[in-house]
Image (cartoon, rainbow, N blue to C red):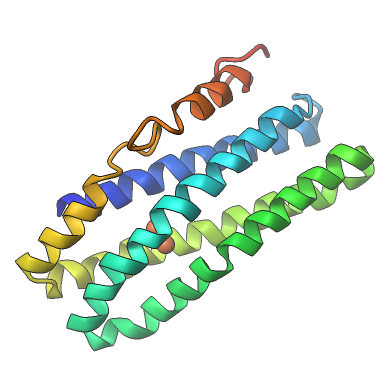
Amino acid sequence: MKKSLRIIHEEHRALAAMLNGLRQLTDGIEKGRMKADFGLIAAMIEYIDKLPEKVHHPKENDYLFARLGARCPEALPVIARLEADHARGEARIRALEAAAETFRRDGPPAFAAFHAAVLGYIDEEWQHMNTEEHEVFPLAEQHLLPEDWAVIDAAFMANDNPWEGAAGEYAQLFSKIVNLAPAPIGLGPG
Ligand SMILES: [Fe+2]
Ligand SMILES: [Fe+2]
């Protein structure tokens, strides 16, 4: 697999792991097994916001999708769908944050709506990442030329550590999440 596609895949795995942690936490709250730690919920949403919105999606748009669209017109419809998802990303994360805030403010009566918001967000992200990996990656491998990969690889190499960020900007946020989250999500007190 091309270097940049491997990095995109690693970023998808990092995001999927965080989404999975958030799902386990909300499922645990529903079952009464975990307490609603609003600091932890906010930190997880912040990570989910920063990695895909500020780093991952813009690079997909500007490099991978731009090059692929130019080389392979048959990829344009799927690229248009994925770019539309990216464009809605900011609003979707704000809606998730708002649901968490309502839950914090109103308590248990607002939990069901928060839980549904989490599950809906995760479902859409899964479909999005699967489309990229199963539809876009194969077309890219087939149609892009070495000069395309050189440009795309250079862009994605700049953020090859999704857990910590290229300049370590997420390291603190990530270790905070790991230390707050109870087992089996993280290392925090159960
Ligand atoms: Fe994407
Ligand atoms: Fe992606």
